[in-house]
Image (tube, rainbow, N blue to C red; front, side):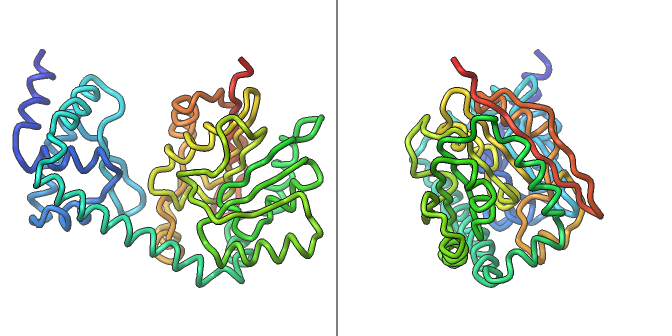
Length: 310
């Protein structure tokens, strides 16, 4: 009972309750929370420490940044969600906080979108600085089933390279991307290759414009590190899989190259196997053993999972 009383005591303060509500809507840094709350950084940091010590918030570090989110596991994780749900939806203070949170998220998205616009024409060049493409592509093709793939979806298709790679093995393929400039590059590449059974479309990776249970394979290649909520992207990808369908995520293993965040708008500095396994499980997928492709200095990992056949 002591841990429960401690958690309730930690939450029983207006600023800390606001912090819980904000961290239930996404992962936020101290500076972002300070901006939203209009309070000093030492004060906000002190409140965050109390909430973390009580088990109501999770804290994780990526390079020089620390992020906070509502606890997902632990003795009081359910209590944290219950407390947030109990805050009236029409509370004026919460409404103002969420408006400011939306402004921060829009600014993040615009930073990433601007990067894509600035780098669309040289995307392959930028990506080759960090990823051993040939090795990654060979590992990806090894995942193609013997009978080929019926319907394939490439989320965050960029220049369309994954569509070109898998085109000989699929009946139909669709690539989606949120950048018109990237899609212009992809369309030009696909037209040049004469791939008439492959299409691209402007769309949001959080709201994939295909029916539930309609895809045999979904690929998310070097995109997830830009996502505000990667677990939601995976859940949406899993939604569109047929029974027996596969999700393949290609991205960097966890690393500390802060310049990828500052210079290339990466939201995440890679991912751990544990986080990916948990997100796959939450999405209802059976995860396979990850494939690690060590590089210098980055390691590329292939995480894959399958929707149960029945």
